[in-house]
Length: 241
Image (cartoon, rainbow, N blue to C red; front, side, top):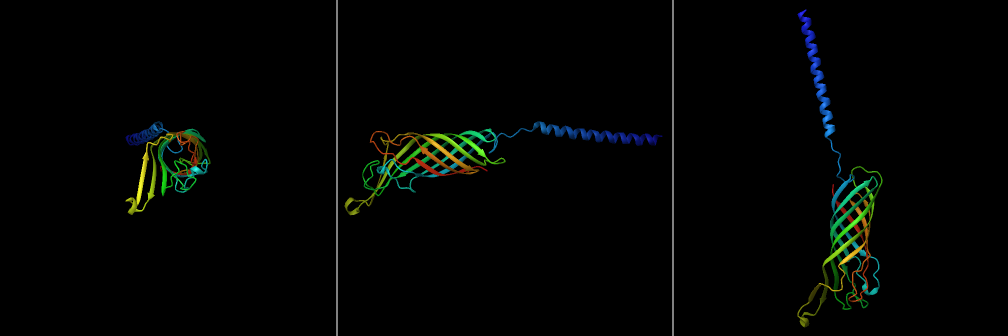
């Protein structure tokens, strides 16, 4: 009889231990689930920040032949920070803040009047800008936690600083005393520092192709100068994983 009691007691004790172990396992699993916080930051989540580089060429016609540039040597380079807020699975809003350098290499011919009529070996207007951009983003196609395919449409405003007019001329050193003379003019009184325009981008994850169209004028009424080309087209590279 005592042996039966011992066997029964052992079985009951084993069952209690098993039940206790199962109960603890379930409780632990429930705690992990309850402590899980949904992600809100990432390429396809509610919020996303990333840096980027861009490089583009100034293209399109000038206002007239007096303001022609050397295409291929006139460029726009920028580096900045971009934010996107996802509002719908296919739509978001955002802004960018960046620094850019814009270089207009001026063609030297008898028609040139911008910024003056003097012919040089090399001549360029160089702008430094701080740019603030606001954009709408439209996503399309299936994607996981990546930026995916998108189209951006927006506007930008810019403040120019450190704007220079550079010229280079070559002379006979036996006559002039120097073979090459470089001149950099600053604080130009015919430049508009505040600029604005429209932007468009089509992107494929890290790579995007963009167009920026300047609606404002580069020059004020000081000299009544013709406007240089307003369009910049190029590529952007997003710096993120």
